[in-house]
Image (cartoon, rainbow, N blue to C red; front, side):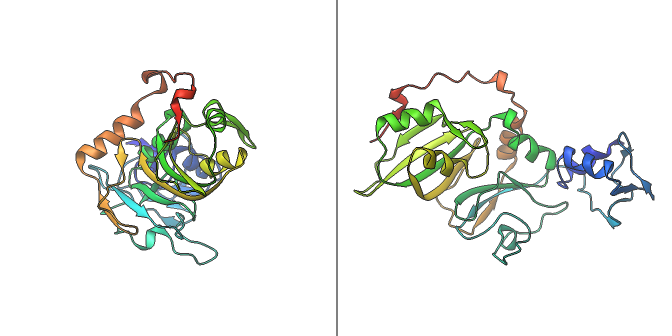
Amino acid sequence: MIRLQKLLAASGLGSRRTIEDWIRAGRLTLDGRTAQLGDRAGPHADIRLDGEPLRLQASGTPEALLYYKPVGEVTTRRDPQGRPTVFDRLPPPRSGRWVVVGRLDVNTAGLLLLTTDGALAHRLMHPSGEVEREYRVRLRGTPGADVLTRLLKGVALEDGPARFDRIEGTGEGSGSHSSFSVVLREGRNREVRRLFQAVGFEVSRLLRVRYGPIALPTTLRPGQWQPLGPQELSGLAGTAQSSPAGRPPRSAPSKSRARSR
């Protein structure tokens, strides 16, 4: 018997905070009565949300997979505009449901992680975890060293200051475009695009190539997926359990870290 919010979060039904909000709003019932904060339940309890029975994940190792999201797909289960969603191509999990780890906007492609462990997904996305996200960025124009240094030191966005942890030129640009690899440890909405926009540059192509220890395989093509093995899943769990205090401190940005090759 474990706390209700922990049981449901482990089944991928939402974060603990979301489930606590359901309980406060009186939307959850437990064995025929309105659930209360502090209630405990087991995997065979009759738990319902707005009258609909919830399907709990069977005990055992949670599932996870990586998906190469193409441009044009959304990461929500349903889209009011009728656009395709990433869930259209995914296999059904053995139990529970897929939870997206760090969404990508419709115009961004690349690595998308999904798991049936809602608690793990929440820890991987929480800002306090500072999990690295790496992107390949194609820009219109070529920023100078002073602009790259500004992006490492931090610029003001409408939802607060933000910065990249690393920026490196990839050498793949042309006369009118430039290409960079960037790393940051936040998952704010459209943060990479907004950072470059704040210094006067438009992102024409954005690809996420890594989330924590999981990198996008070179053999995978847009629209394809592959399951994560036990070692990869263990690595993700280890990343989620690491606290910022246990990581090396962020060094002060310097011009040597902003290089364009």
